[in-house]
Amino acid sequence: MTNENTHTNNALFERGNRVMPGGVNSPVRSFRSVGGTPYFVASGSGAHVTDVEGKTYIDFVQSYGPGILGHAHPKIVEAVTTAAGAGTSYGAPTLGEVELAEEISRRIPGMEMMRMTSSGTEAAMSAIRLARGATGRSTIIKFAGCYHGHTDSLLVAGGSGVANQGMAGSDGVPDGAVADTIVAPYNVVPEIDDTVAVVAVEPVAANMGLVAPSEGFLQGLRDACDAAGAMLLFDEVITGFRLARGGATEWYGVQPDVWAFGKVIGGGLPVGCYGASREIMGHVSPLGGVYQGGTLSGNPLATAAGLATLELLDADAYVELERISTRLATGMRAAFADAGVDAVVPQIGPLVGLFFGNETPTNFDEVKALAENGVYKTFFHACLSRGVALAPGPYEILFPGLAHTDEVIDQAIAVMAEAAELLV
Ligand SMILES: Cc1ncc(COP(=O)(O)O)c(C=O)c1O
Image 1 (cartoon, rainbow, N blue to C red):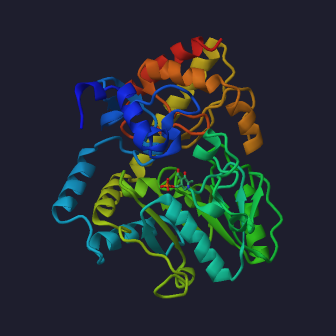
Image 2: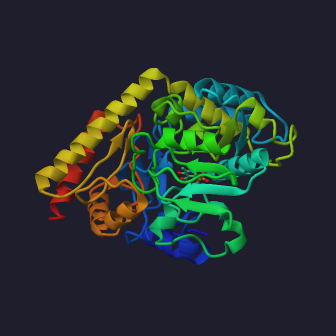
Image 3: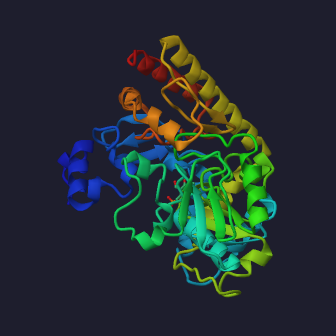
């Protein structure tokens, strides 16, 4: 039931809170770490979203990554509409799945086979199961501040929503589920012995703000995994098809054994995928003994949207994406410098982060010290009230995309410059 009263952000938040924890379906959206009432989106178009009260924002959330082309891109709308007209899910394989898998395989050197899932969480979880099944070992190593979705064994010291809620992990995860998980500091190659099945890493950490892998870190992991007979998993749910055409593997020239992807390859629809060499993927059921499946995995809408997205992400698109991101990062740095605000705006290709402080953090402890200084919250609201939507939490990054024109970027920078003045 609706009435005119319900079409305000406050009214919808109140209604939502009655039927959903925090009024949301994913914790960060609730504004817990910045305070206030979330804007309820009525529609999106390109670089903008409009809320139920008719207020339009320049959107740097972009669904936390999938919106690399912006909202409601005509080619994606057409692909999804056409696919929907032919049925939304069959429980039988389709041409679209084969085409999407072929396209991904062409782009990622060494990823010969893959399995589609409905989320990045499932992709990372299944990649871990595959690595354990293929090596016959149990231990997994993850890095503090990296987020790999909400699988029991991977939530500990998670970035993104876990960090935004000020949680070290999650209630409801039995000790047994994390008994085989070792958490290491990012940017230090850990000891890896012969009990370790897999080392899972975000090749660029993008769930504790933006933290770059230090020189030699990824290659160091590769070498240490090889020496110990462990697998290396790149969780490229954010970096995949954003950092470069071939993701972090192409960008850094380091090849993992197993990859997890999501976000961009679904064009805004629920998707994930994990993959590896033909030999390793031979362990996945029905070829091998590692079970994993899904009613909606590789569904026709997601594969159609993903294919349409990748079609538009040609070599020129990546040059443009980096140019746009550089314009944003450079403008932000100038805005903070002019206002006399201590801020660091790290940029790695199309990935842009923001920390309020002097030093560029290199691991989760350093990030936390900056993220918890309270400045982001003030900046976030100053931007939001002026029509620029950043992620409602200091552990997220900005997602500039191909819909952010120079004009839009410059408008956003002008708003950020005004907001920065309020911080001093
Ligand atoms: C690196 C990484 N891995 C895994 C996930 C989980 O993906 P999903 O939210 O689609 O389950 C995310 C989500 O933000 C992510 O950033």
